[in-house]
Length: 348
Image (cartoon, rainbow, N blue to C red; front, side, top):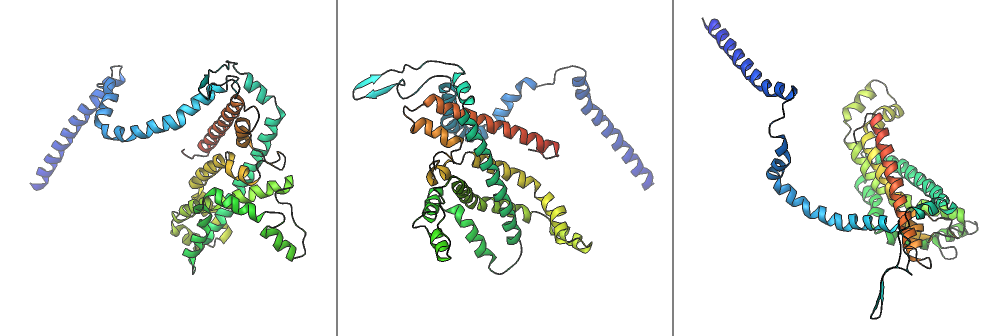
């Protein structure tokens, strides 16, 4: 009797579920047959009414970013389409105000810059500088992160020491390295002289100057890379290494088949960020060598700065053109990078 009662209850529950399921599927079938989804036009208004607090919190940030980033960007794009320089922009001399007389020239500035061999020289060195810095930083950061992920005495002290370059302001670090690289009184040449090696023109020779700026930028970038990769290493389950070790996998095999795949998501992100930062790394180049000796270490951003603030007359339109081209190159790189990640199955 109890069995018959339970079967009757189960049957009734199944019938009710079928009715509810059919009722739930009814509106979807109607929508699939072409009827408009109810309330679709009021989606934005409903979202604003529901999440008004979140929108209110985000609005000041959006406004500040629009003023700090959006307006200069729009202004720069506009100036790149003119012939503005310090002689024809609006300015005030004493009590006299002189109106701007620059004119719209279309894409002439882009044609001039792209047709100038200087642009391609700066671009080649900027790409080489970026690839070298990011590659060396990633390899050293991964090596240090792997070592610091192990248990040993004094690990916390080593972590603090390796993060120190990140904590020091960039311009302070660059000035310290400039003192170290000094040809006559620098510590590095003093050490070499003590070993019977002649002084190295770290900042006076084009080749050595390029090695110097790369070394300083790598030194500044290692802490970020190390911390990010160390976090990625600590997120990999330890059971994977234990299972691989029980199966007889060697350290290199465990690193290749467990560590590298486990770090893929973190690696892709830090490589992208490091590439963008290095491509636009103005302080290291300008404060260490000022683009010299000659113009051997000038990259795109330092050339744009030189056009706007050092050249005479200052070419605001030309500097804006260089800036827009830099932005376009980074956007193209980001799009290609994103597409390559999607082909590899990564979501970004």
